[in-house]
Amino acid sequence: MNKYQEFDNKIFEITKIMLGFSLTEGQKSELREVMEEMEAAHREGLLTDAQHGRLLCAMADCGMELPPVTVDQAELEKRLAAYMKLELFQMDIGDLIRDYQDQGLPVPPKEQLREEAMGEVRKCLEAVMACEAKGHLWKERADPENGTSELTCRRCGASDHLQW
Image (tube, rainbow, N blue to C red; front, top):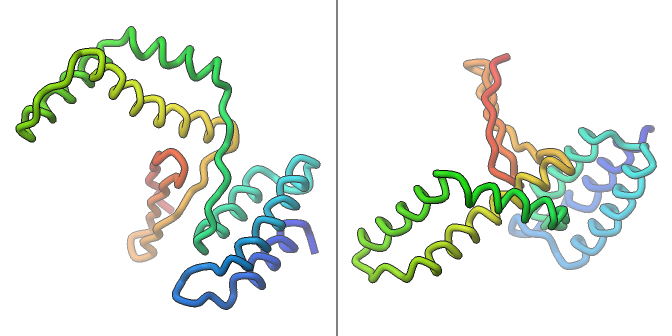
């Protein structure tokens, strides 16, 4: 039995009985231990990136919260600075102003709008950078009748359409 099958079997055994479609604290604890073993096996090259991602998706499907991926803060700040120079940044601020106006709320000062726009982009960039570092955590919705699949990343929200 290879490492992927070994971890897949462990996840199945831990999660085969779930009350109300949620994990017990004991199951979460056991899954965290398996996750640590998986991370070590992945670092040692015993699991491919794709296998590692599939196992994490299996855990997420069962309701396990995945640990956040750390991103290079210097690179994040560099990307944020580049975003602030784009016309898109000004457009995003304009969209925020319209949102406030449409809701009948007072429009905050320009600096607050800038911070709000930057906060949203920061979250998005962190998710994208995590996927760049660790790979997407795809969830598939297959349509066998039409031979297509819709893939959506659980981490960054990216999507892809496949014809097969």
